[in-house]
Length: 353
Image (spheres, rainbow, N blue to C red):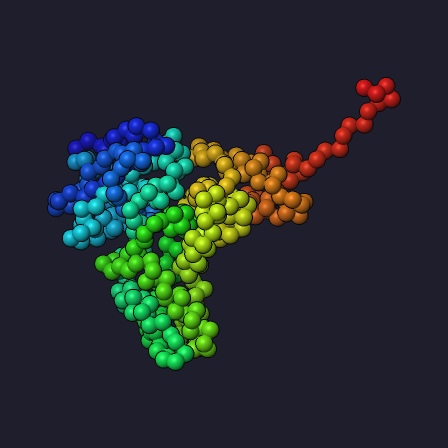
């Protein structure tokens, strides 16, 4: 059986590939190319790649291809769902030819339009684990029990609160790429194993806790403080802020501000701590996975340092960027703040030359 070869995209900056599951004894898909501006309805998947050592084989267009175990689990779950199995899906690690660097550069540059154009986005938290089904069911229940001072109702029992906290602390919520994927999604469904709930139902959990906190019943809910401080709650709050500020969503924020907001988020490749935020940025930076970390650092410095209004701000940004990209102080070949400071004019000689 021959190795899989990707069908060529007409224009990687305007086209995408979409997957469709087909019936068979194993996971099998067909893949199609479309212009993004003229493609049928599709679902974009937001998920974590997982370890590169955990791979599974599937068939695409009758040819074998290796994919991450987490993506494989997602496709397996979709195969057994009567409605979702017939959808078209965009899954980055599968739909982008990861061996073609030029294509990767082009496709990463249109990630936000890909998620914004999708009919809906499936947030895949991963397979079921002990307590995850309870968490998903409890999240739906608790979202319906908004606490009121005149009629107090406890929204969860201790074991339910513990289970909800576990899914709110899953690795998914700590990844840098999910920020733009969630912010630009029109309609989100959160999936964990065979369970699902809407983004609104998921967010109501945090809103219910905020209401409980205001009326003084917070102490009656074990794990409530931890859930409100969880990575999932932070992402929900960030999406709400972007939705409220249409100018921010339309034009983006300076990259220096984005780095301050999201520098703690993780990525497999260090450069993705930069590239994973560019879709939200008003600054234009080149995307090139062939560049060394130092070159990416210099690209960002050239764009962002001139925007800093004080020496202290320049130093603060440079230090943060070097930490995020794992560069140690004194690295040769990298730009420093001094390189952007105004140099004193040369003193003219007595002849006035």
